[in-house]
Length: 334
Image (cartoon, rainbow, N blue to C red):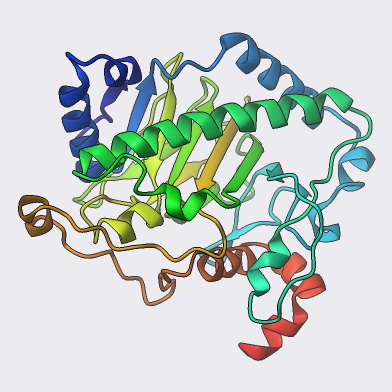
């Protein structure tokens, strides 16, 4: 298990190669929880525009970025300075902007506080092309994610739309554009601390610098080296819960790049409707025997209530936003 598998999504569309692709998909997701995906159909031209406008964003004057700082958004949208996001109690050394589904602010029932996460994004006024490009990229990756979920459903012996019941309303679309500063020797090398992702799937576009590492079953770390023309796909906790642990949401981390060069990373997270509850799939006897149950972490319990699980993660990772906009909830949990 020294390197991650590479899958070609064009094989899913061909009757003569579909079954082999589904078998490869099932094993990659179960044995690693991570794989490279080529043949995804996303335009290289759009990708080039995305990279260009992302670099332009990070080159903006600090005042332009701080004008849309996340602490001003009750929806956890906008810019975050390096060291302001927390993973497992430690600072992540990355600056980034978070983008979600572009939605209006609506009244929120008191018993559904996770709906406070829905709302408009914060966009840099000095870079109008940024909004257009990011929303186009988000739309394209939503398409790929839904196609992948259909493939996962078939690989698990289910109807291809079995997951649609929990994303069809308002799916959770979350996009980050991230710059990892080069190491300086006077701070931690934690770009992002070890963690799992909470949604269905993560689709990662990374540059050629590298730094993502995936935890193997023996506790060692596999370097997810960049491969041109691919996304890195990883399984989120929704698929782990739905498959009773047959599929793996794997722990991963990012090590800051060595001195002399920054790293650009653009992960997209596709999740379910915040009001949904993750179902437990009825697996075949053969697959059910190999399902070990979802992994349990006493410090980070999993909930089948999608919104509750997602809100918990947001409040932990951005304590400044939580303190300003969610003080009422923090007081309830002590």
